[in-house]
Image 1 (spheres, rainbow, N blue to C red):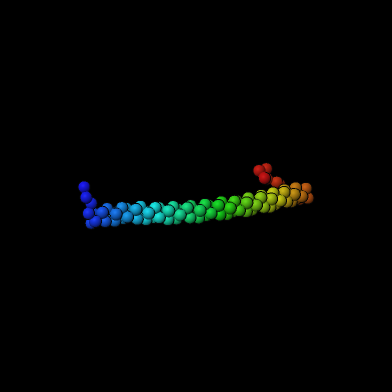
Image 2 (cartoon, helix red, strand yellow):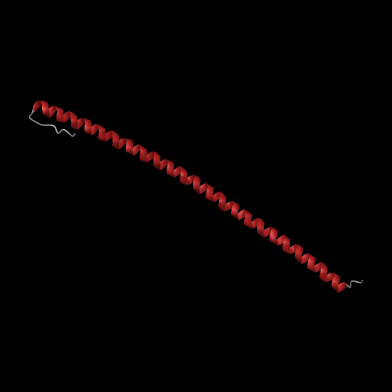
Length: 98
């Protein structure tokens, strides 16, 4: 069985094309994996920033609720003191529900 130069050259060129194609596909796959990794890292960073911001907002809201409760309690206590004073010194009648 004799292989002439034309057939041998076609076989070598076909093998080279297949090897080049496989190499190029491997490069594309690596590029896609790198992009996926970058997007994943950016997503993790955005999530951690969101969690930090959410925690800060929760702390601020809790602080504001504490301030409001404290002011309300002081106002309520002052109102009771005024009602007691007025009940003792005048004919002021306190409401039962307050």
